[in-house]
Length: 91
Image (cartoon, rainbow, N blue to C red):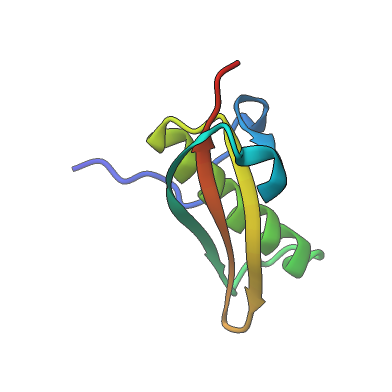
């Protein structure tokens, strides 16, 4: 059985961040969410969890075939989470 690490680095160059106003000519692919749990032992715990949560959401958007991502909500408690909307736009 193979286990993958929860923290991965995603090539965010594949996804462009945009506003809802820019998405009128694009195809909505779905809502995405990313999360990261407390427990990291580094000095910048909040910043690292936010980066992990965003990487998670970007990976999910990429898996949908998205070219653009509109960030939504950010929440922090025992789990840091971000939401967004994935779109595919003609290049």
